[in-house]
Image (cartoon, rainbow, N blue to C red; front, side):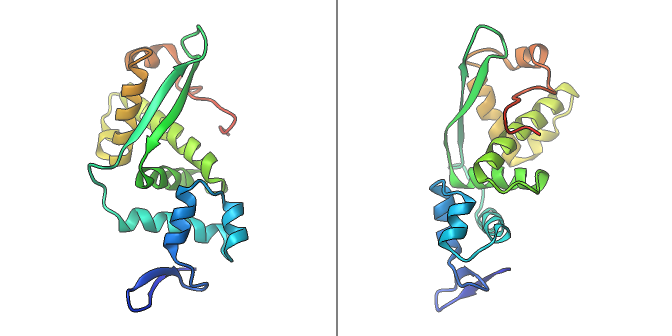
Length: 178
């Protein structure tokens, strides 16, 4: 399926069904899952992720984009930390989901993809730092996530600590990791 402009105001719709992609965007931003979307609209998983990619392609990154992460210590051990998202813009959320979808193509759960994408972005940045590279700074998304992670983790430790204490291969292991 593809996206097309229809009507006198050129509203973007899923071409075959005529569903406004803004409706899909709004539902995803309201944390509706793919099952809810497919029940509500006659669309497929591919349509849903095409809408996500369209939002990223059609909107510009700007200074209003943000992600706010918070690290919460859950125990006495250095790696007893949970990472929580306290706030983010739709564009960042959709970008993280799209990034994860490019790596975990078989996954269709939007929240799981967000979690996997966030973990992968942080791991990418930390791997670059470990390898003496600054490649992550060239990606707007990596940069936003890394800055937020540093701000969050700095409240419970330093990034140097996380690089020496935590094994980067087990960093942020969760029920979502493959």
